[in-house]
Amino acid sequence: MQFDGKKIRDQILGDLKNRVEKLKVKPMLSAIWVGDDFATARYIEAKKQVAEKLGICFEVIKYPESVTIDKILEKIINLNNDRSVTGIMIQLPLPKSIDEIKLIEAIDQEKDVDALRFCSDLSCRFRPPTVLAILEAIKESGVNIKDKIVAVIGKGFLVGSPLIRTLQGKVTDLRVADSNTPNLSTITLDADIVISAVGKPEIIKANMVKDGVILIDAGTSESKGSLSGDIDPLAHSKASYYTPVPGGIGPVTIAMLMRNLVTAAEKKG
Image 1: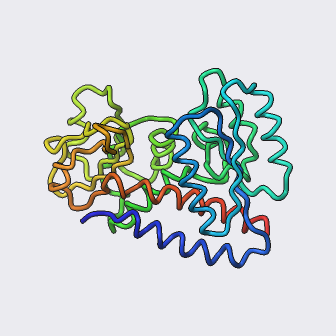
Image 2: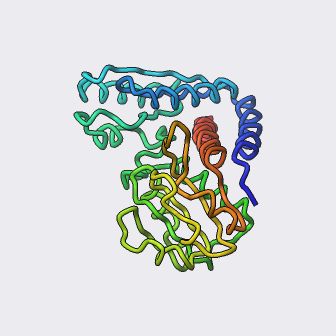
C-alpha cells in the first residue's frame, strides 16, 4: 500500500483551517532567511502559499549573507517580545559564518514551531514537522511500532537525530545507522520498519529489505534533474506499505509545521 501524502496533508489542512477560523487573532509566522539559495526560496514560497490558504499571516525577514549574527539575534529577541508573532522559524541552511545554534538558543520555546530547539537537544514545546510527518505515516500504516524492529538510517540534525530521540523508549528494538555504516544491510534486512533520512539517492536497495517491510522515505535529493528518495523504487514491490518520493513525507511536513503554529496560537488564547 502506498502512503498518499497529499491526501493526508489536505485532511490536516482542512482541520487547521477550521481551527484558524475560530481564533480571535490570526496566527503570524515569521521566517528568517539569510542569503539567496534557490532551493531555500522554493521552500519559503511553499510554506507561504500554505499559510495564506489557511488565513495565517506569513512574514519573511530576509538578510544578505553578509549580515552579522548580532543583527539576527536582535531581531529574534524582538520577535520573541512581539505578541502579534505566534511562531518563529529560521530557514536552514545558514551561511557557514553564522553560528546557527546561538540563533536557535535565542528563540522562545513557546514560538519555536519548527522545533529547532528540540533538534539542538534544548527544551522545546514542539516536535520537528518532519518527525511528526514520519509518525503520521507510520500511524496510517495501522502498525503498532512498539513490538517492531525499527531501523533508522541517518543521524542528521533536522530529521534523523530528533527522530531517534523521539522513538527511544517507544520501540523495543531500535537500530541506528547512517550512510557510512559498513554492511548497512545487516541493519535493515530483518527490520519490520525502515526509515531513511540520509538524502542520498536510492541508498536502500531492494535486496536490503525483507518482504512485507514498511518503508518510510524521508530523504530527498536531486538526481538527473528530478527528485529522488533514499529508497530504490524497486524495493517498493517488497513492501506492505511505503511512502513515495515525491508525494509522501514532504507534503505532510509543511502541514505539521502549520499544525504546530495553530497549536501555539490556541495556547495564547
